Image (cartoon, rainbow, N blue to C red):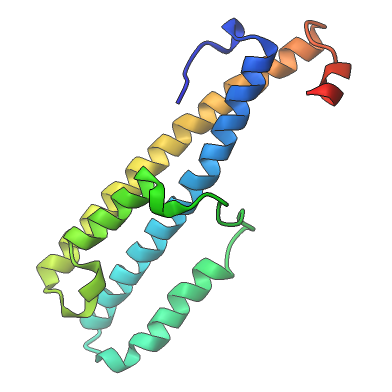
Length: 162
């Protein structure tokens, strides 16, 4: 993430950095939602076990978790057009899941489930912190753009060409 002082950037650089951060945020947001969904599935498995239910109830629990991520809450942007197979952040999430047994969730021990929960929570927190930093930088870039237009340093006519 380019953290240069927005006041030191040219108008074109300011717009370019802002657009780049917005594009990156689409991907970060998507990976964060995937991490949250996986974490919800881990917690649903832990709750199923705590209630003493068998895996026969897993399909209804899975349906509830997935429906909350696919249909609930505020409207979300679509999956980025970028192929996530070649993305470091997505790869890191997959590595966490692979190293801690996400694919064999129903066969994990209680300790392994707690560890997987902890690892996914840490990953999601890190991504959320990065996203918050990105938003702060986006806000600073936007504020500088607004200031330039307000103070007459940039022309609104320039928006039509760029």
